[in-house]
Length: 142
Image 1 (cartoon, one colour):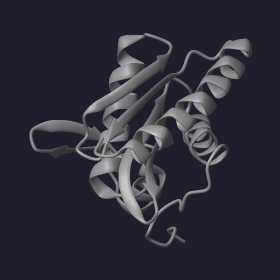
Image 2 (cartoon, rainbow, N blue to C red; image 1 turned 180 degrees about the vertical axis):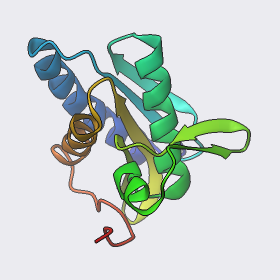
Image 3 (cartoon, one colour; image 1 turned 45 degrees about the vertical axis):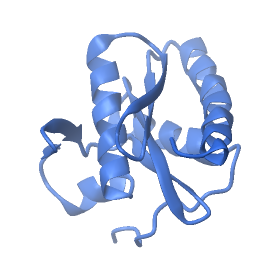
Image 4 (tube, rainbow, N blue to C red; image 1 turned 120 degrees about the horizontal axis):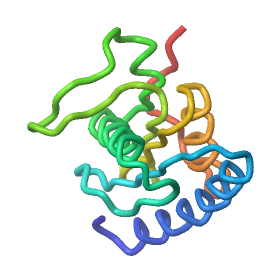
């Protein structure tokens, strides 16, 4: 992360994600939440430590940061669930959302462990509940 503002934004998102993780755990859902900066470097990890879910959440966050749009939007446009970026695997299955502040991409959040619809919904919920940010600079697929 480059600025104090970015750090504060991610702190607010992490606080919201903790609420979402606790509710999911209360329902018996084992989810992993991973935050990455705009370069795709992991900033924070929370939730279930199941390595497969955590790897998927990381790949979804990296894809959302790389593309600047939600992986749900990407998967609606593209068939196939993975891609490569700079030698690092990325996953465009639903569950990754970019994080923008003042029109600038600052990073992304990835969620995995549930079904795709749940992962996508919780990623959107964690991102949008505590701060008002644009979902994506691109229109949603029809």
